Image 1 (cartoon, rainbow, N blue to C red):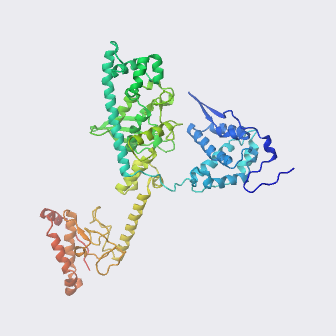
Image 2: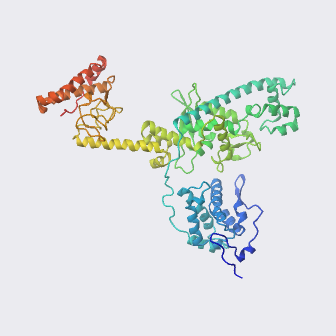
Length: 600
């Protein structure tokens, strides 16, 4: 008998479901060969609960992945898991086959991506994220188009895919959040403190080892003589020092002594852990303003030391595959009280040189940031590689430990670059100056990705000031000209009279001025209670002297009575102001011979 429909919203099992294959307990792994490297194996574990899709998705992933980078494959697997297969899991569609991928199902998937159900945090996904998760599936199905077994089904799916979804998805709607200036300063201070501590640690290690090597042939207590313990470890393990349990199996006394001393007081004198490298990564990120993945993948062959006219420098070339050119940074390497680039790279060499003969992955041979994890498998590894970027758990855990040790607010490495570029704009007011440091080809990239909301607001305010000054210039027929070459860059463009500072040009107390409009009372600033004067600068004083002449020059056009009533009090104020000027400054100002428009 046909089953009766249940209440709305409940799942109704259909007759064919009893023939559904049981979820697979075997691992679904796709392997990609790599020249000179071990094969890359990617486990598609999300297919275990969708047994009817294992064969086509595995085949499509293998065909698609043959022409894509390792990191792209890993990201595509993630997008498939949280996108299409997250949708199937959440909506109870474990029984689907490739033939069931019709237009109705695709539209339902798109609606799901556009809802808050697609996010773990309950908020809407960015259009670029929705697009990545949707086209992760389409790319795999597209790869099956010419497959003898799955080609017809794949072509049917592709034909039903809507076009031009999420228009403007590549346009960043909000820039990456930047760090506050105080937060960045505390990060730099903490990182520099750790670099100095590591330098002292290496120096102490050299002293202990020198004494320990002398005592090694005489013997002694490994617990009481740390230098002897270090020398014994150096002799037993010329490369990576294993876990304390392994050391104890070789020599119980040395193993027990090493366990009591701890990692930092044993292996820490020979090479770096991931945690040791965090301050170096942060300081170089601040100095170069490189992308986070570019910093983590630095290579020694792209770092050159030089001397130009007695000035020491370090030239760093980063790797940025998607950019037209690789970013380049030239850093001062002159010795000083603080850290400098030469010191950072010298310490990095000392922290990693022991590890280089023991690298197991050829891709790590030239990498700057080599280390041995404090826990787990004791082998040489690095932060930056094609399949290891800032999402790498080793980097995230090391950074989290740094933040916790110094009581800092949480942050991530990718925030440093936008902070540096945004701070340049705040300081200079010039987006092109920030572009020169960030090395973007298109200024729009800098504007969308690296300009904070606060800086955009300041730019908008500055633009508003320009429009207001231009309107006043038009209304006064060019008398109050903000473009005037007489004005120094630091002079107040809001003041109605050149050379003065106005505390509130939008709320002038002078007769005839309207609140909310720029004051246009040219020449009246000496008698205004909101005005201030710069009597210590010759350029400003020259303008005050020019105003005095402009007031006198108005006598023929204004008339005697009107001039006495209107301008004589202001002239007295100008003369009183000039009496406070230093004679040397006044003499310098007189030689400038500034001429201002006649007052009216």
